[in-house]
Length: 372
Picture 1: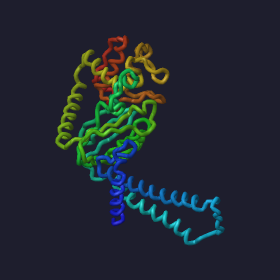
Picture 2 (picture 1 turned 180 degrees about the horizontal axis):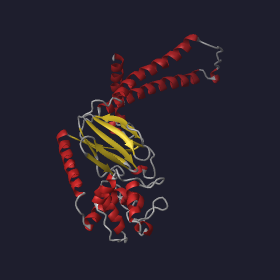
Picture 3 (picture 1 turned 120 degrees about the vertical axis):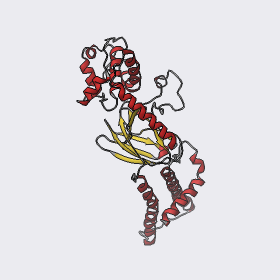
Picture 4 (picture 1 turned 60 degrees about the horizontal axis):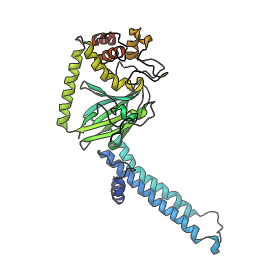
């Protein structure tokens, strides 16, 4: 513990010496959690150790090259071994590495201790969005990229948070330990928020865990740090940290909205209602692949506008959306979207862009299908 205290104190002093680095864009952030600040302090400690080693080694090398250069009549010494020197250059690096390992191990132990959490959140990576479930609270939602397509295509000026804004941020209370359980539905993703010092892989078929306790309210941005497919760069993470009272209010509102959404499954929706809701779902979920106008990106993403083969087979259309298509980039949306959203987007796709089949899919039909 004494060694760890010495190293952490040294880290604080070294961080002060290099304080100008903190505000720059090319050093790691200090962050807003105890772990992130400890990681930063450890980073700066080892950085300055490396600087000192570099100065000593290269200083000795350049001094030797200059002081004992051949033009000044220097004669090369002839010897084969020197036990004392060999012991020193073996023992000294070993002691330095052990000294680095002590605080690093203590920090790693903290990072991996996800026990006694106040809140559990399941984070599921999907191409190319994140799904969040507040375990035990009956609240879950999908977080999608919210940067307008006009900015991505260069038709309008890029915003301050270009490609780092979402329609639904992950809302967490400050001062509470939150355990993050991470998995994926399709390929390997990686949930990364630098200011929280969290970077954890989300692997299909496995559940990894991490945790965070945020000290300051605010909005913290990150992104998927794994090459997960065509739209890898369009998979941001946004965490909104709020005070406990505000979080409780938000959670109660989400529970009420979820209950209202569940009630909507049992009633009959009009064409206009489904088209309006379906346009919203399509824009956030489907447009990145099939394009806003339904033209698609053949052959990987077929056009939906005027796709007669799909329009002539409504059951196939429904199965494609619900269960996906094996061996292709089309995922299953049975766990991503609720019955209302699935019914709405299918109705929208079958009646938008001139398709005009006049067919309506009701949420109750989707609910019955999912329960089978």
